[in-house]
Image 1 (cartoon, rainbow, N blue to C red):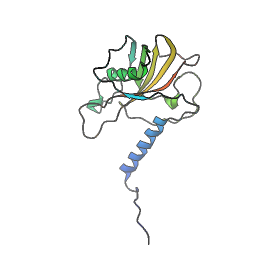
Image 2 (cartoon, rainbow, N blue to C red):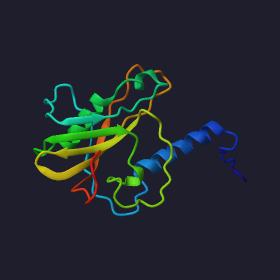
Image 3 (cartoon, rainbow, N blue to C red):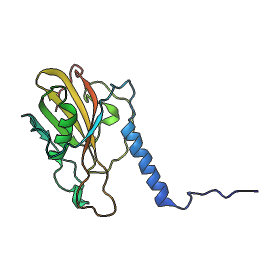
Length: 180
């Protein structure tokens, strides 16, 4: 007796959706060619009642998606707050924060130093990923921070999802690396 098995043939939207999810997961899990530092815990955006931020120099290029109204506005304030929430712990005080739209290429946290080798990078949805660095007043180590938020749903939500930040590396950068 034969049993009918479901088939994805002919269901191109479902197949394409699965492919997008697989590519996004591959990017988030990275294609690192060497050992990567142990990341610190992931933390979401802080609550409005959290303590006042330190005086740090901030440079931010917002992640936007002009096609989706909820993701078309400047997202820097929320992204900087999420980056601070994971980086300013154990008494560390940020002296400089640099964030921009996109992802670390192949977990290369210190671009311009060394070569990451070949690593294909899939296209990410605009408005949902950011990355950057946080330096500290009394510490030579720099935090490489990745930020993401859920993509917009088809329901036409009025507000963008909150940013979630994760420290991908916390180390003294290699010789020759300069924070943008």
